[in-house]
Image (cartoon, rainbow, N blue to C red; front, side):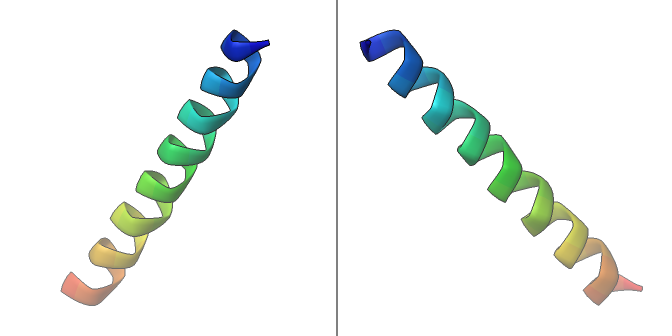
Length: 29
């Protein structure tokens, strides 16, 4: 059960990280 929660948090974290990176790239251009 703990493993499922950990995986979910990890996926959500990388998803937010990807959105932040895309936002930064847009601002720089």
